[in-house]
Length: 208
Image (cartoon, rainbow, N blue to C red; front, side):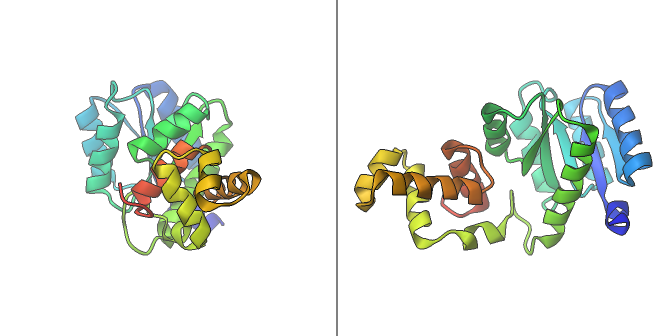
């Protein structure tokens, strides 16, 4: 595990030097993660991140002045294999959906411990190492874990079909339809139907 920790390079992108510099120092000294604070104007911060070429980039939701999606897209274009995590105030359904919609691989909440961030960085680094071909939110194993029925349910969800209507369309009981929907959400690592559809579109499981 120590060998893996030593190989992790993380960029912390935000606009609070005191907070992020201290956090980067702690990650380096206590968890063996090569962390670097990247701040300043949006374009400058992104260029610094591209030059650093991290395994994982953590983007503060408060940065970007509303251009979070643009920042993520630029990072994605320049660093296609880098995992991107959104740093939000709390892990709510809204922030999770915002992370998925902007193209992030996952989310870390500020109201959790620093250890949670460290573990998230290690997990994200492992996901990146296991990815065969680089792509936004690349998760090739996710699509393979969906059954034929679950794929049908996913496509209906993408079309805005309700759980009750899915049961009617597929001629299955409502409870069965609800169970399929829940499994789809869990397998895609999502927390809502909307987030599951967003993840599926960005990973190429279904067409945008």
